[in-house]
Length: 221
Length: 271
Image (cartoon, rainbow over all chains, first blue to last red):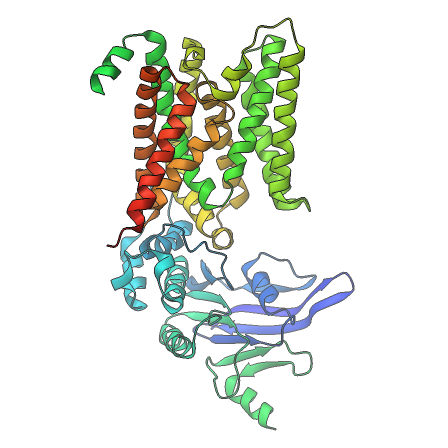
């Protein structure tokens, strides 16, 4: 079932096109990886999906689906002060703000489920800044999970993670994908390290939208 | 200590200043946590100088100082906020320029206006004698508003303080909450300037949070510790200033400095 459709999407600043005539669709429980070289507009496209940037032409249509009610977002290199006195639990709870009224309590069950799903319930009371890079990224993913109703948008989430942490993180994403639609921008995806079932390439020399298997075939052709 | 306080609080004007001081300590610690953690501590400093300039103008014009300075300080805080967000001017430079200009205007007006009998030191360093009953009532209501609004929006304030980008992405109106925070900061400075002084009120915003940061592991704990330290330091500083016949603002700031040093030493001790 299609939950998001983009038709002839273009964005230009002055005379320079960031991307031109992009068309793609995202179905329920898809895991779409957006790839491309630096400056090809991957993060900008995410901001268009999030509604932060309006495309110059074309349109993005969200279909009425529980997954698209609230989108969970994991920004690229979030500028977080690591001396900030916030516990992992407080950071994850922040995700519930978009679904909580001013005087209502946070949805504790949803927060605890996210903590357990990402195996960080044991570090919930620890200060965010004292956690390892991999643990911090899991906390931020849990926050995005709490904020979402089944649709995650991740902007280069494996940045600054070492090989093992990256591998673990991708495994977690694949597990989450059974009940969550994921759109992920990544720059370190090569044909030895493919995840997700769909790929959108913004590389001007190799434009592509299709399944991961087709992408691999095309690369080797 | 208790007997000194009991003796002091027999006087109406001291009791007024004491209550106002407690309210200011509470407000400044609450607002300070956000400003310090967002590395915007200098906003408090800049706004207190603007408050000094506006109080000087109000006094010369024969207007009520607090009422006159509140809208001006609020306008200045929103101006600083917009300038640091949208302009090519560096935020720190904008605050420094505004702060120095306001201080210069205040000093110039007070010094050149020979028709008025204004004690410059009482504005710069505060005076407990300066708190009238009218001022105390205004401080009480404004303080209650600051505390209530902070408590209502505490989650949103935490979110924009911790990660503004994410807060924006999940639909929190970041610019609205930044403006709320700027207004709360302005109100705190406007009500605190008369007792603590233009040069010292900003330290009351910064010190309690800095001390609490040495001890706390989460935001809730940090807010509670900062407000507790702020109130305790005010009570000790207030009593000490009475005993030593020293300026209240300066004494309270010195007690805060001692508290910060002790918290810092404690944080360095092996667990």
